Image 1: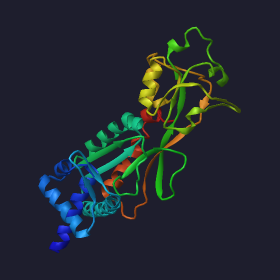
Image 2: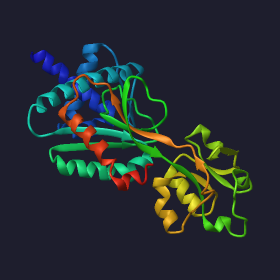
Image 3: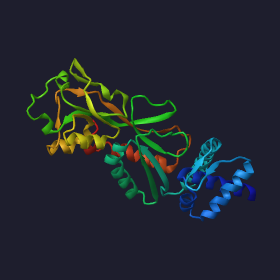
Image 4: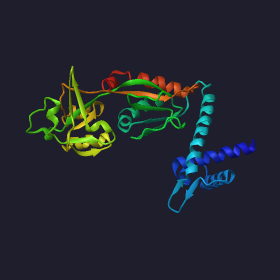
Length: 306
């Protein structure tokens, strides 16, 4: 039993170093000394007979074998955390650490308020939010939930719709000054545009109105992979942009942006709460799933996601 306990300690120390990128940060996360973490990782490498980390005076990185072992240890740690949370689930209180990943702008607009309300109801819960343009792997055991904008969901995931993301074409009033208001998609052609370089389909904008449709390939003077930066550039008159309604509603109301072709729609994209299929979800996971789905049904959120 003592040997197993030592092995677990070594693996947890290595997992923390792999996650945080340094012995110092790993030690802070684990609440122990840097020397202890370094010693445990060195003993793990000795026990395995393999080098897991490349150490220089300036940086620390994983070897190829270290990457694979970090993934294996991550799954073990997730199983360990799940086992502990199942024990906690026997109690009346919802408690533990909840980890959520989502697209950057959606997280900035919605997740802070959602998580604030959830933590207010469950004071024994801590939450970690990851906002990124990178789609995180939900099968590595690190993330409990993701909010994703997509039409195609991996069949191994469970998805529940929370709304739709409606994109609209917008521009600053200064960019439109002295021009005839565009009435059809083709009228947008002469306008300079901004492109979201994170999406391969953003180079072509498809509009629909009833049974009619129109496509435009605007000349993108500037490409940025972030919605908030695109909005800022649009408000500065650099070019027109295609942005989520939930992001630009206030800018439209305040006159900083104007909607182009208000009688035309761009295809909507479903927004879903997704998670891996679980035979034994923790009480915390069950509580958050129910809370989040109900939270997004509120009229003020549906007004932004419909």
